[in-house]
Image (tube, rainbow, N blue to C red; front, side, top):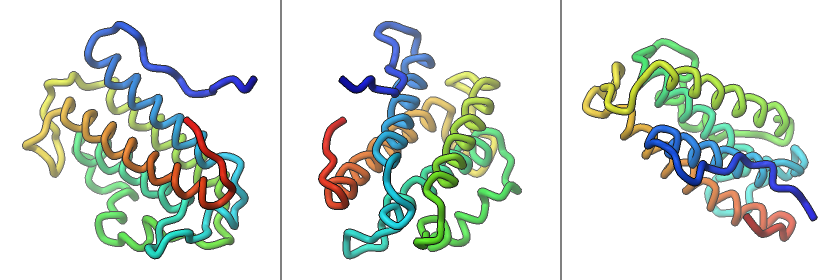
Amino acid sequence: MTIDPRPFPPAAADEKATLTGFLDYLRGTVVLKARGLSDADGARRMLPSPTTASGIVRHLAQVERSWFHDDIDGDTDGPWARSRRDRVWEFGVTAEDSLDDILLDYAEACAESRQVLSGHGLDDPCLGTSKEHNVRWVLVHMIEETARHCGHLDIIRELLDGTTGQ
């Protein structure tokens, strides 16, 4: 029996812990879906669009940095700003890109997001480009965004090697 490595959301907690628990569970699902693919399979296009497993993970790392650093914290000058200017770069990968490196970068982006979030309450307004949103909205959006891409990773992984499940 394989032990599920994802952190499960708390069964009963306050709103912030519940939201962050579900987001962390989905972040773990991204890693679960991508881990074990070769670099070539991570970069392999299985759909008519340029969507790849590695590209989705790279995109999610940039989304983490953009929403948490840029939008919540108001730090609009970081390297994540490139994704607003260059969407091809954000999703683009080649067979030479290391999926392990992309997953490591995603883990670092998620850790950075947790650090940013630790200094804000749910009702705090965003300080960056999304001043009309509060932190709660960003967390709910990140749950939606990450869950949607988990579904994409499900399909890509099944097409690549037949793996299905959680």
